[in-house]
Image (cartoon, rainbow, N blue to C red; front, side, top):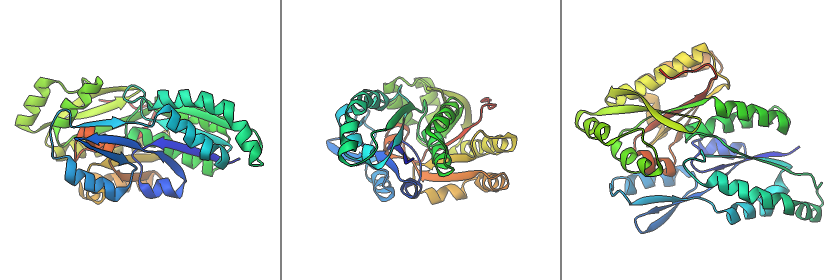
Length: 314
């Protein structure tokens, strides 16, 4: 059986990983001032975007425009129902974006129209589709996607993969340390995120205090505060080291950075995490943070995610 995966471009996985495993990306458009920019997870385009656009700090300068119901329906009927026999569509949390709702609406039309298209192409009429909200953001969206890739490569059946993904989604934890508090305070708060209030923003800006943010099951909160970005990054890596040593539900940790990914390897604590991960058979997937993420959390932010049912933020 041919099993495919579709994600939106907020999913922080390396482009080479997506290409190697034929993971299809639904672009998200961004309105930046009077310009419309497409987030296609192109590494070079992303770096150029960071350099040209993210130095502006107007509260209303950016907004995201996800794929519509009609666009998702067309994508499936034109391509996916022919290329695959079953497709998993894994989206960013439905509390932050309408992509999940759009995909669910599109799925109803897709499942009523695909038979004639497959029949005309000489294919079996059987086709399946599962739309899942990952209930998470950025690297947290990437963890179940990476695990889906692994299970497909091992020959897993859709029912087994789907059950596994639903378990991981409920147990994926994402951490993020921002370099610039403005974007989180001004932009993420407009989407209902209250993890950084005005007083914390003002004090943090004066004293270089960075929040350590945590996202789990659609909820984002501040779990710690540290003095300086480097200290926050080191804490994230140390959390991951402990978690790897205690056990993960999937053998992968996803990281993204709002800058050149190569810089992550020089950050304090990364070398230890890489060593412990290698000793325990855990893959580290490091990618540029998506444009979609960067307009909400700012350039220079670092995000890290893993799945562990026994994990409790401290």
